[in-house]
Each structure stands twice: as structure tokens, then as C-alpha cells.
Length: 112
Image (cartoon, rainbow, N blue to C red; front, side, top):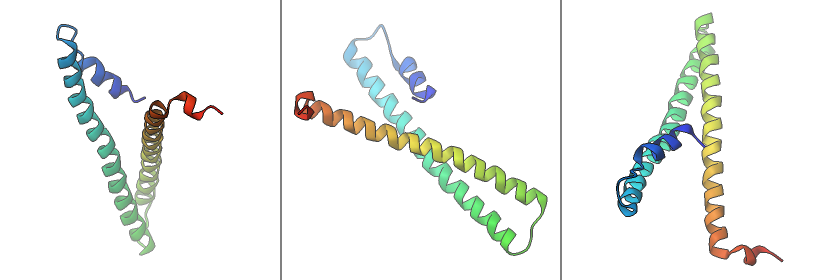
């Protein structure tokens, strides 16, 4: 799990408040975190793909120099990192949906 997730939980938990208000506050904080984190990954991926495409177009047109090659390599590396983050997000979403399904069906429903 992403470290920032636990930071949001820690920061939004209020020991002094009643549990209902604390949970409501956490729900809002986690929803904001989810939107910032996941949409940030998608937007970063789109921006990197656009930049890489631009650099590759320049290189195909014959305007190649070492700085451009290094930059394209750096962008490719950043994109690989973002793709790993995106894969983790999808894995976590699938796991969460599976757990919700499992809780709905119950363990007895899947044991033969």
C-alpha cells in the first residue's frame, strides 16, 4: 500500500471525536487522496507519452543529438515507473472488488 495512504489515515483520525464524525472525516480525506493519487498517475502517464512521442518525432525527422537521446531515455524510464504504479492501482482495485464480492457471497458460497 502506498505510504501516502497511511499518512492520510493517520492525519485524518481524531481520537477525541466520536467515531461517526471521525469516519465521515476519513471518508472525505480518503476520497480526496484517491482522486489525487489515481488521477495523478493517469495524467502523468498521458503527459509522458505525449513528450516521448514528440521526442521520437524529432529524432525521426533527423534532428538527433545526445541531449535528446538522454531525455527520451529518461522519459522512458519515468513512464516505466508510472506504468508500474498504474498496474498496482488496477491490482488493488481488482482485489478490493474481489473482497467485496467475497463478503457478499460468503466463504461458504465458494467452498465446494
